[in-house]
Amino acid sequence: MRTKVKVAVIGSGNIGTDLMIKILRLSETLEIVAMVGIDPASDGLARAGRLGVPTTAEGVDGLIAMPGFEDIKIVFDATSAGAYVANAAKLEPYGKILVDLTPAAIGPFVVPAVNLDLEAGARNINMVTCGGQATIPIVAAVSKVAPVPYAEIVASIASKSAGPGTRANIDEFTETTAQAIEKVGGAGRGKALIVLNPAEPPLIMRDTVLCLVDAPEAETREAIKDSVEQMVKVVAGYVPGYRLKQQVQINPIPDGQPVHTLVGAAAVTHQVSVFLEVEGAAHYLPAYAGNLDIMTSAAIAAAERLAA
Image (cartoon, rainbow, N blue to C red; front, side):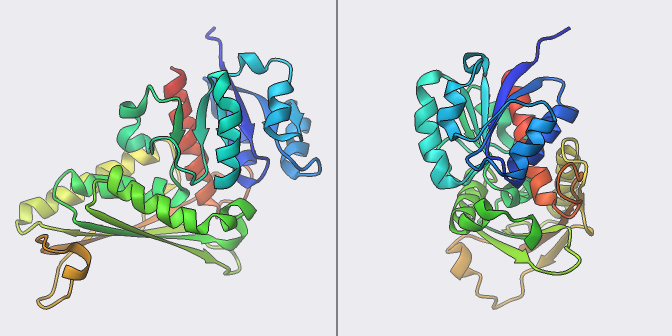
């Protein structure tokens, strides 16, 4: 029987707790041996204790002092962008592989469906954001077929699924996602927006992707649709609740539309509009929290590949 790779999770909030439960229930490669927080009364630490996972409420210092720390190969960080910078500095001397689920963006951006193989040797990878994990594969699918001088994404998540870390990192979310749209998705210019929707009952995560493309030929536009549909299947392979909300729309840009403010001198003929829905697996929060599901599922997919 193959020995599992030992991992730790830093951050006992929504994302960290969902990540812990997924590793316990689903991963045949990873074994969680430490859950790390800073609030002894947090639900995540309490739940870890009930599930038999060793815990510490002393942050990274407590993790380093835990018995068996030297056997841990991969450390997931699900705290905040600011906290991750300090955590990574403390862990750097120990040679661990760090998987960053915050928008700190210290390491290379990784979106498993797009570029994981390129970053397989990295020791510190960044999982961008939940919105980035949902939308960048689509931008990449379009850019494989036709140039994308401009891409814009809007991620709408239930307010109840946004913990304090997410709320504290709204600016980092938009900046990091926009950078990854360009670096991983292949867009000339990227823009990202996030909406915390307070609707009751909470709504499932929705994502909109808009790409301006140069695709005057009908064959190119059909190839874009096929590429997007194939990419959706790839992402759904590790995030089962990921799906198209409706068919891919490709419409000509009307004459006189001032798109030069977005693309400069680049030629564009059509707008590609893709509407997505991400339903969570309800391992920790209810199914409306697809933003947790896609982030933690992507992180596990990346860690399993790195462990292999």
